[in-house]
Length: 301
Image (tube, rainbow, N blue to C red; front, top):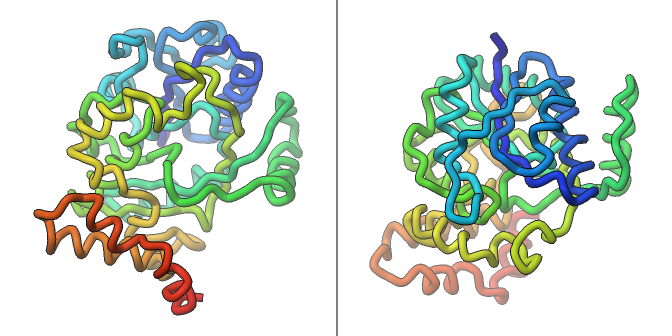
C-alpha cells in the first residue's frame, strides 16, 4: 500500500511532442516513493505506454459524446481501484520530484480535510529526459534559467484525502472551469486550500493546442461552456490559487502574503456576498478596472 494514488487521463500519443512530454511526466511519477499510478482512457498509444512504464491502465472511464473523459468518472475509478490515503488528479504533462511527496506528507500529518495545489513552472522541453542520478538538478537548473512561473490561474493537480470530493459534476477533462470549481468547492466546504508553491517545484512542459478541435485553447472550446454551467455559473470558475487559505513554507502553514491581486480578489468576494443580486460582470468591472491597478500596487510592494 502506498500513500498517494496519482491518476490522469493523457492525451493521444500520436503527436510526437505530446507523446514525448507525457512519457517524461509519467516516468518522473514512477520514480517517486509511496505512489501508485493509474492512467485512464482509450487514447491511442496509452495501452503501450502504460505497459512500457509499468503503471496501471483502466479503459472503462465514462466520456462525453466526443470521447473526452468525465472528471466524475475519473474520480470514481480512482477510488474504486485504490486503498491509499490520498488521491491526486494530475495533468499528464507535469513533471514531479520528491519535494512533492514531502509536501503531501507534511500536510497529511497536520490536516484531515484539505486540498493541496501550487503554481507551475512553464518550461520548453524538446527532448526526452535522461532519468539518471543527476536529472533533478539538471531540471531545476533549466527551470531557474529558462522557465517561467505561471500566473496563479489554472491548476494542474489537486491532492486531497480519499473522503473528499465525493460529488464531482460531469466536468470534461482538458477544458476550462473544472479546476476553478475544485477550489470553489473546497472554500465552500471550509477545507484548507493549501498552496505549496514555496516548497515544491512542479514543471509543466509547454505544448500547443493542436490536439483540440481547430487547435483552439481549451478555454475557447464549447465543452468549457458546459463545465461553467455545471460549476454553477461563471462566478464559481473565477476561483484560483489567489483563493488559497494557507501556504506551505518550510513545513509550516502560513497565511498567504497580501498582494494587490489577493487584495482585489478579497474585495471581489466581499462585494459578491453583499450585492449577490447584481450581474457577475458588473462586480468584476468594479473591482478590476485598470485605472485602480497602479494605485493599489503601491500599497503592497
